[in-house]
Length: 255
Ligand code: NAP
Image (cartoon, rainbow, N blue to C red; front, side, top):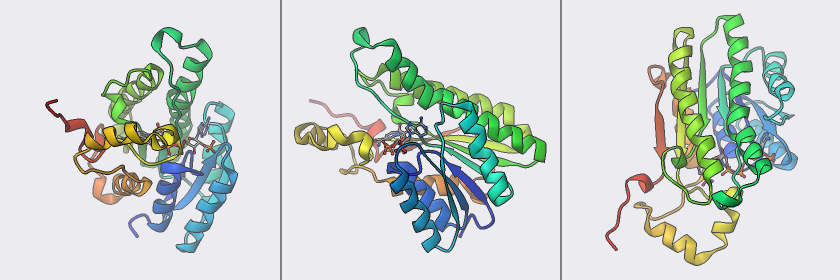
């Protein structure tokens, strides 16, 4: 129970990696604000799992691209649980388009969810921490594609590359406030975002050959790293990206 007494906000807590993170933080003792947009049933499942561990969860519908919703998430943490200590910017999306065909609305949407959302939600979180003169932990779920090229997904790579620089900048700017900021870069994790890949056996098998540990990751693999970064054991860690990718980023094969 490394997070007893702490309060965490997790975006996209009704499915995939965010659900795994919210459950893990809850079972480490944190009370959790579980954000969702469309996955209400999933968010309720997350809350029930946290309650089964003996902690508390509060489900909140909030679209991270809307500043009013960002403030609502932070305010709900303070109103319901008295404060917030940990913010996990997990919500994200991807769209596949060749660069030359990428429409403006697709660019705007991916950037809004993956970069603008974390920017203004983090701002709302930091403002409350500053007022209360409290330290805090910020963990962004980025991607190996904050570094690694992904043809056909330039909008996604731009958003995650931006999230990497946001994290580095904020580690410097928020350090004096006692707030740490880190990214987790998952590789290929079995979640709904990868539905097309999971259903394409030849493509999936080719990918698995590039993963030294020989399997896809799970939400729990990512959640363990979040629990560590949110814990006292990580109090001197800020400004870093942590790969959770089964070795994918270091993998190279002669043909
Ligand atoms: P997922 O199951 O599709 O989850 C995406 C989550 O984002 C959903 O919970 C969704 O909420 C939420 N979301 C989307 N738009 C939102 C908005 N405007 N406001 C609030 N929440 C919003 O996929 P996932 O794999 O767990 O993805 C989670 C994060 O991990 C993303 O940032 C993704 O880029 C990153 N990631 C995933 C992988 C992978 O292989 N799976 C690899 C690297 C990085 P609703 O369901 O409620 O709509």
